[in-house]
Amino acid sequence: MGDPTKVLGTFFGDERFPVEWASEEEKQLHWYYDDLHCPNPISPMYSSLGWWGPSCEYMYRRFGAPFGKSWPGKIVNGYLYTCVTPRDADEAAKIGPYYGLVMGTYAKDFLTWWNNRYLPEIKRNFEYLDTFPLDTASLPELMIHMEEAIDIHERHLLLHWILNLAQFQASIDFNVVVGEIFGQVDPSLLGRIQISVEDRNWDSIQELWQLKEEVKGNPELQLLFDAGETAKEIRPAMAASTVGQAFLQKVGEYMKEYGVRTMYCHEFINKQWVEDLNPALETIKAYLVSNYDYPTVYKAAREDQAKAIEELRALMPETATEGQKDKFENALALMLRMMPLTPNHHFYLDQGTNGRMRLMFLGIGRHLTRLGLFDDPEDVYYLTYDELRYFAANPKTADNPDGYDG
Image 1: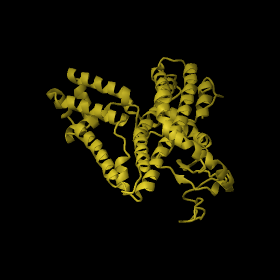
Image 2 (image 1 turned 60 degrees about the horizontal axis):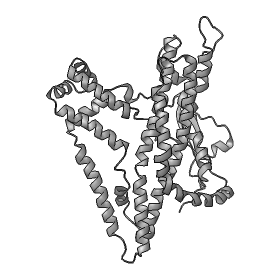
Image 3 (image 1 turned 45 degrees about the vertical axis):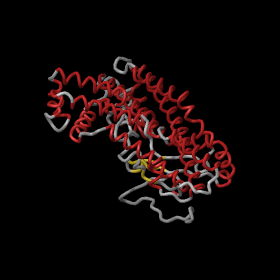
Image 4 (image 1 turned 180 degrees about the vertical axis):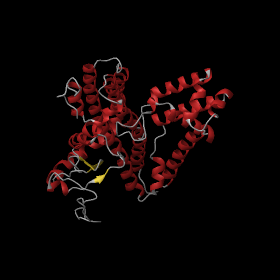
């Protein structure tokens, strides 16, 4: 095994890629470009309050995680770079047993907490955010609403980490049990087992497929979708048709439930599906062209998972005790119950919460545009949190030349 403390190489910046360092200690950390979450240049608003790093200190503290104490971020040439700050070795050794003490219970009990406490809380928060009158509220009301939304966002980030580590522990425990009882097992077999077959992603796909089936069964709707390759080409014909208008309303209803999403959800600048029907219409168009068959795809996923489970059970050593068999079945059942939390947390927390933050800021941007203070509502994302507050309260204008102008 390699030495985890060995330095394989360093790069501290050069003329082509300048990097400003806060300290020599900062330079000793392992910084990486976080293209998983933020592959594009990060907006000032998101970097000032949206990103998840500060909440990780809570995660490391709450769980007593020995493998880190914070997750700082650094904007380098417009892009987000992050690292994990390690714990002191003595501190990690002291807190490690606490992590071991509590994590099994998190894995065992979290789903009950999620269903009974956390998910209802999230849904109540969404109802508040979704029904707030962004386009009629006054500027003071909008700014106070912003603070409320930030509180919700921060709370949801904390729930995100409780969920993540609980689900992670259930999967780790299953893999450990498999290793103890079965020995080396093909990772692809375990991968076929460790999937979710009942979650909000499947629900979203099914309902969009049902809309596609409606088009397929209605010759007039089919003709409208045949009118072009893109939603931009299709929508004018749909808007001019009574049948098309009714269908667009159904797509709009779908968006209310599933439309708070975007390709890269760890940002505020990316337009949500709920703001524009085109992505949904083009997905329906693709389903029509490919004759996408949701029931067949879903049935195949469930059957392959069940088959993989039986393949693993068939590998149970003849020497395994009844106690080992029970241990395996319990770990398997817990892991399977927890698997839907991965796509569901993405639906509610990563997509749902960040997307609603975008919509909240967009409402403020529309208000400032109506006041003549912005050229475009999207300008709001190019201020930081504090800059927006300075500007909203005291904007520089012809009548107020000493105001704030960013």
